[in-house]
Length: 325
Image 1 (cartoon, rainbow, N blue to C red):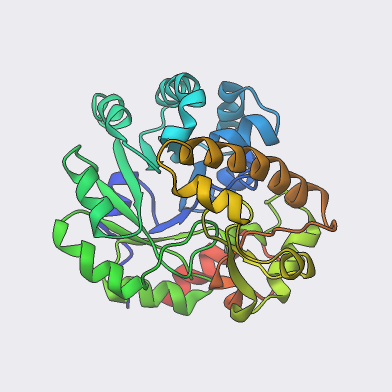
Image 2 (tube, helix red, strand yellow):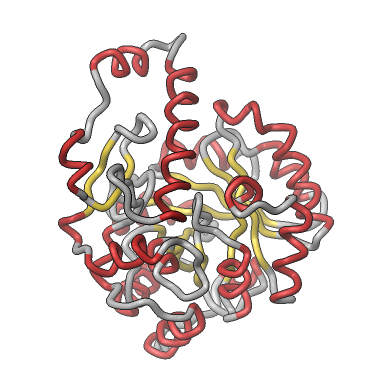
């Protein structure tokens, strides 16, 4: 029997050690709320909520509150390239705190300002990391936990296995969450037996009734196997885990020679990343919501191996918990 009460569940005030990772463009309010209502933790992705699903941020949070009174979290991108959004992000964090949110997941930069705001009201901040050097950078700021993104994750995956990351990061004496490769109950149980305080799933929750991504996307996940997941830098300029399609094969997995030079140059790399990110935001939104086109980039991780059908969020979480217990 696996103990489902962990330091993470205590801090997040949830029943089960499961997080629905923030996803652009897939984190619609109904999905976030369904995960929280089922006893796990749904995470709001602000850019998705506002620019994909069309909510004014505060009203989007109210929509989630209409669907569940249970805790939810908010994702905050603190990357330098997100400077254009920094004032908006600070406003969104303030509005999240006003709405009662006390759990935040930061990513891609310095989370110090988020930690200061959240700690002031007794909240908790976890940060995405892919190896020890990034963890060391944020520990001094007072993060409460680490989302350990491994080499089986969808989107911007890490390079190390779940076991390697746990061995590297477990000694810091804060909760560590396994992010990547969790597609079925066996994966969930293995992560907890390894010693993780919880798991974060993204791909598994796309193939659900509550996620409003296009049916084509969900079916692509169901049909895919592990070997169909490839990493391409053509979308955002850095390796992104996607389902292999005919279009992915046609254009290749690497940026062109000019872009490669611009990415390596200290003065130009931030601008070229910003350009690629803007282009990716538009492309991924179209693919996820409008279905099959000639330019398909379906983000997904190797957890596709355990996903066999579209189910409700509650059925998935209940099954995971039942098998673990």
